[in-house]
Image 1 (spheres, rainbow, N blue to C red):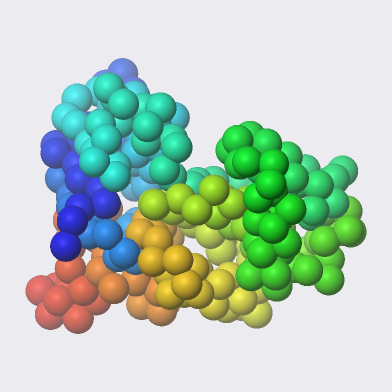
Image 2 (image 1 turned 90 degrees about the horizontal axis):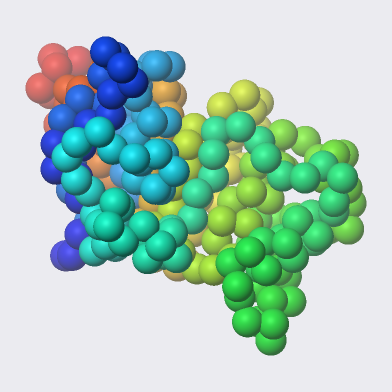
Length: 229
């Protein structure tokens, strides 16, 4: 298997505070990897570095074989990213939100309509395509944002706490669609969460981040055995 993502002692400091501390990690193509940690553990900061939104203080990382510092443009072309905060435009319809992203991703005009319709159908939003996103539930908005992130068929999809704030039914709907993404497109998926049940349901392997340090890595069974759980 080839590596979809690799970090070598990746570090981010804000003044005297070290938020991500010398993190080394390797994720294979097609893997669904979960990073667990409490709020403030450094999960979102790590994702922002890997998606080129925040420079590292030291260390290095590659995504899809490209260096996040020296080849940031190439990295951005092959990734999808869904941030923790809901960000879809509530004054546009679901269809219109996706149309904007087909333009941002520079998807060829001949493919835009097909990609939009496929995304809406795949995420179970076809019936709500022409409704204003401001009328959507939180779970529907999250599914729309995942549809946006997959329009250009990214090689690696980053999901930052994709179900935070959602009710149990909406969480399970998002879980179903994340699993379908992996099965249908073979994407590598890197997600952060502070829900152990979410990691267990979705991830083949996971890591635990504590105060910026990777303190455990492996399957859930391996981590449980090593911790005595």
